[in-house]
Image 1 (cartoon, rainbow, N blue to C red):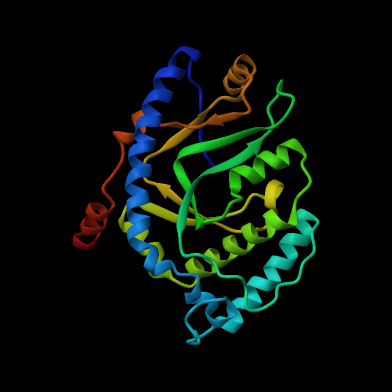
Image 2 (image 1 turned 60 degrees about the horizontal axis):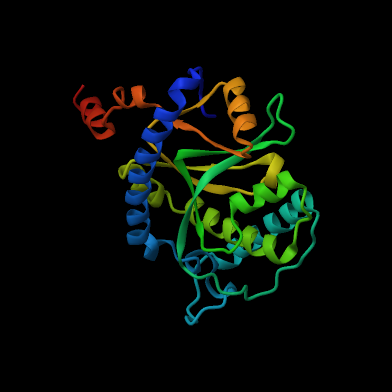
Length: 251
């Protein structure tokens, strides 16, 4: 959970500007890393012949992986979206194109009529390219829109596919950690139940201002979104993880 820190209204503009600059730099680096690692994240590595593909080679564990995906898919669609659907094999091809979406969530604040969508400048959801994404889902949920099967189904399948990939490949998690991004599996119970998301979090710290300030800014701007802020002071306290590990070995 993002820590909360009280700041003055006058500080907000300057902190926003600095946060956006840092987030742009982090995002640019992360996108370059993700592009270079795309070959390691092919969905066929876990789904094999259970997904449409030009390759006919069998993948060890594909049957079990499909069963896990299908079971989770049915429960998420039913319990979280009120939708039913049966997966047939092979699944439609999932294009091996990775995308990053800012980690977002909905939160209700006192004095604000509808929940706000919060996002963070230092965390991203990693997923396969899909026309419907997390921000679209949260927006629809806040607006009370009816969930549409043709949008939700491919979104859920892709989220589950990359979740299986990372669950079974600790090496991928270690690789991203070496690049300065912690891999975690997160859920948004109020938005999508127990649907898992692969989230990449930078070592750069962030915080959220107090609710009263966020509420005031929202009412003044009429906006429905708010982005957390980079903890500029916290950057000074950042440590070099490899240095710490080496010191631990020598201790």
